[in-house]
Length: 111
Length: 178
Image (cartoon, rainbow over all chains, first blue to last red; front, side, top):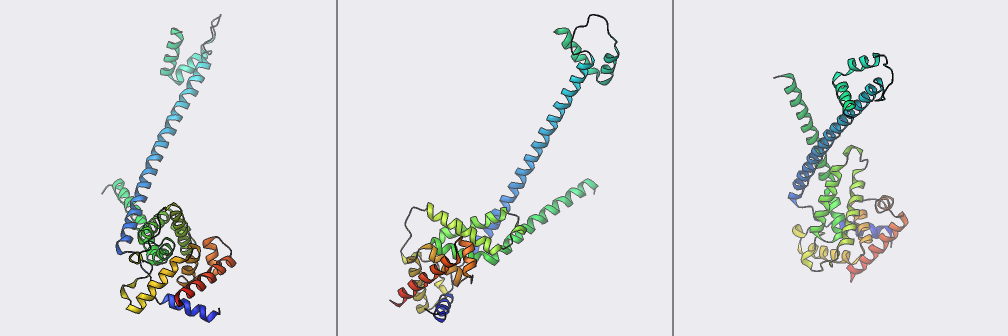
């Protein structure tokens, strides 16, 4: 089979018009694509918001833990001491966070 | 208008513009390539309904991508369409329709009686070919791709593509002469 025969055959095939996608299909596809993109944007926004909230919560919890550990260390980590010690640490702890100190002391009393 | 409200309105307008831009780009892509993609789907699937479903899926998948990153949209779309069609063929358990009423590859509405008859015969002959030969015929004849380009789309070697084309054309010619 030679090249001329090939191109002749190809021409013969090409001379026949092939079917085209139906008219309404384009609009339907574009509509669906826009809808899908919008819902994806919404979903991404919701996820970002939830992650931010989670990060804030974790940060808050972390800060509180660090603070209470520090205050607790300042007042002697709940150890009983025989002789009266300097109240300097106590005063610093009170100065830093009065509310947290009160709750720590209350815990100490109820222990 | 307060500054905050203005910036919100601007932001919203920008988002709308991005959406409209993406939609426009997808529309342009569709206008340029849908016919070629549909032709390939039709010749592999031999069913207009399946080809339309697959065409929708192909363009919806493209819409999820960053359109600017697709370097060769035509090759991308044809490759994606082929994958989808082959996957549909694998899942399709039912037999292909052999009724001439289901013929769909050629648009015979504008053809004269002789040409319409020729189109019917060619379509019937095309259906006798295995899908891998049919797709090569369409990609070579209608899309004007080289064997190397077809090989990339079909993930085969150019020699394999060339021999598939040769077998297909020989068979088609023989059937049409009978």
